[in-house]
Length: 324
Image 1 (tube, rainbow, N blue to C red):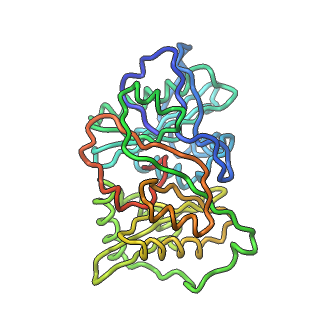
Image 2 (cartoon, rainbow, N blue to C red; image 1 turned 60 degrees about the horizontal axis):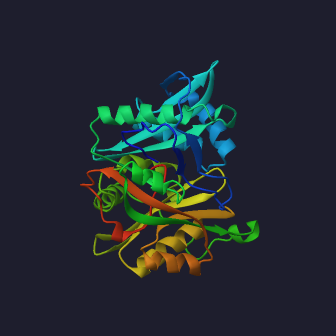
Image 3 (cartoon, helix red, strand yellow; image 1 turned 30 degrees about the vertical axis):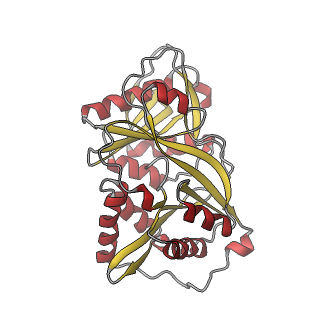
């Protein structure tokens, strides 16, 4: 979720990130009013604030865990912020920059008891100031249909469409493991090669995130190759209510199918989610054949100079709207 510069409008309403999420939780977004209100004290978020962040995301029904909050804070220790009143955290916002090529603003949450006071706007402005200070040339976001027209007024343009699809299985079926058996451990050298291949696909180095995902959920990390060349890869993470597949990259249908099948086989949860690129017909057909159902739509947008777009034509699914 990202807004860059120019949040000077006084009466618009912005809906951030995801609308009603039928994958098991509530909205991954919210609506804030850009009207004037008394400023609330903001400060840099620290590891000690993770429980407060978890409280807010639970209220919103989001899928993130303490490990996700830690990833944001480790990646951007000076660029995550909280709003606080009477020593109570009532709002959050995170930023994450990828090689100073582009950046995201994410996890913008406001306690329902404090909404309508412009807290979300304050947090966004603070995040924008921080990223502007780093001279980030582009900021990207994944917009809901409701928020898209307003982002367009802020000079964001569309990059591509994303859809979240969800698979629900009864516990007895989810517990079954296919013929893949136990996951095969990846060597450090192969993991490095995957991260290097991902740089071309994503548009920047995010190896620090991918390695963190692998460390927490190695059973979801998979690769398909040919004569030493990486033809596809996938990562996953265990959310609070669903296992999430992404990023998921494959150069052909066979590789894409193998990676999706491995993810589903190695997940014992009753709910799995995937944020796939709508333009990838192979991924869409596979998700349908595996029993996934549509949950919501998003538009990836950017403002600024998109000089490092990556190769989205190779991408089946993104890491996640909060990470890029």
